[in-house]
Structures are given as C-alpha cells and as structure tokens.
Length: 333
Image 1 (cartoon, helix red, strand yellow):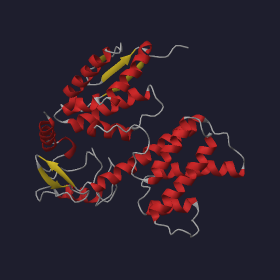
Image 2 (cartoon, helix red, strand yellow):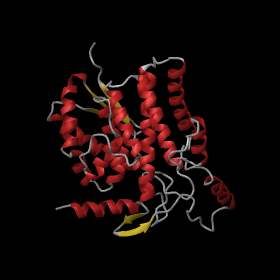
Image 3 (cartoon, one colour):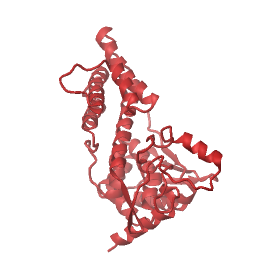
Image 4 (cartoon, helix red, strand yellow):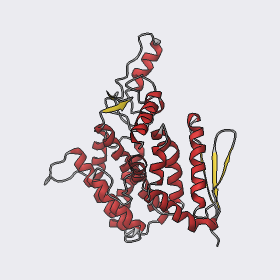
C-alpha cells in the first residue's frame, strides 16, 4: 500500500503572517537540495497548507536531519527580529509536525531548546525532574517495543507513585498511602491541577491493578500510545513550570526587569468597578492559558503574562520585539 502524501496546516497570528511566509519560503528553497518539493497554499483566513508528495519522504528524512543537526533552524532564527515568537508560534509547530510524520518521537522540549539556544541534544534526558527523566527512558522502551503495554503501565504506575511521593515530601521509610489518596493529596497541594491529569494518573493505576488481580494484560496499542503521549505532555508542562519559576527576571531593551507574577498585575484606578471585581474573581482560579496559580510566574508564551516594562501583553509586546532585535544585533559578526 503506497504511503500517503504529507499534509499539514498552520494558522499564525496576524502579526506574524509575513514571518510565516518567509520561513516557508526558506523551507522550500532548503528542501530542494534533497529533491523534496514542498507546496504551500494560503487561504483568505491566513491559514497555510503544506503538502509533500509521499515519493519525497526519503529525501525529507535527510532534509530534516540536516536542518536540525546542522543547526539550520537555529541560524535561521538568529536573523529574525522577533525570534522567540517566530520560534514558538511558527517554526516549532511546523518542525514538530514534519518530524512526527517521519519519526515516532518529536521531543518538543529539545526542539524548543535547539531553536532558541542551538543545543545539540536530541535524545532523552532534557527534563529537569529526575522522575521525568526516568519516564523518557521508559517512553523510549515502549516506542522500541522493548516492553509490552502492560509492562509499560506497571512501570509507569511505579514512576507516578514515586513522583507524587517526592512532590508531597513523603518521608522515606514510611508506608506509602494508597494511590487514589496520593492523587487526592496532590490535587489539594496543586501538584496535579486539572481533572484530566488526575484522571490520567488513575487510568494508569487501574490498568496496572487489572493486570494484577484479573490478569487483564492485553492492552490495545492505541490506548497505551495515547496514555504515553499524555504523560509525556504532563512532564513537559511540569518541566516548563519549574523553568518559568526559576526565571524571576527578564531582559528588555538592554535592561533587566522583575517579571510580574500571576495575580500581582497592577489594575488602573480608572478601571471600571465591574472589571476590578471580575479580575479579582479570575485570579482565584488557575491561569486559563498556562495553568499557574496566583503568585506564580507564567509559563513561556502565556498570553496572560504582563510586560514588566510597558504593562502590555508580554508574549507579543513591542518591548520583547525590541529585545529580540537587540540580541540579534549583538550576535551579528
């Protein structure tokens, strides 16, 4: 059965439309070296559609290796004025989708580091959390079919238990609470902040328990794959969360500013009273975009973070664009 053509779409923010056009032009020209033909169409809504013939997949593999391992994407972004936004909203999603069409694992954490810092790390181990690093190894074993679906669920259940005990500061040597009690305590202490994540953890434990007591060890590959990816995305969020909390300041136009924590934004005295009341109620809940709670720093790219220099929307304000231009000029020979 012949392989299908590769097709993907991306709708960049309006202010990055021209940046998207330039990057896609770069991809088309660079891909020609490997006889890969990338067709690009754009509709009236600003959505770009990329298509690559299936017969070019062999060349696509070599092309992706060249632009990643030889830092092609990093060097391209060094010449872009607002490179952080272009990297996050254009280059990263396109690169991920192209890599997912060729490989089992795209490693979004490493892609982000590579695009902005030129780091060469494309294997596991980029997470800060030790349990997450162990999970990357288990994730790879599953992809390489070195463990069965049930073995994956069993080992993952142990890892998630270890993760929750560490986050709760449970003393070593004391008997561990039951899994569902651990999940409830992590919910109370804002370790597992969404019902989807809590449901995911309980789902893993249920699969492990069924295998122990009922010998139900034949788990569909599709179910295990979905769980594996969802857990990876949780650890990716957790990694981004800790990195964000460590970055207490930011450089803007050559000057360092303290970042604004969620719930610490200044509200104009001229703001309507109903807005003040609404905002006071909003910040009692986790941030709708990145999930942090009041008093914490937003994750990179969150649309709720305020710029400490101008008070505007940080991820797309002029101050950040000016800083990107400043860094680009500083890096130029």
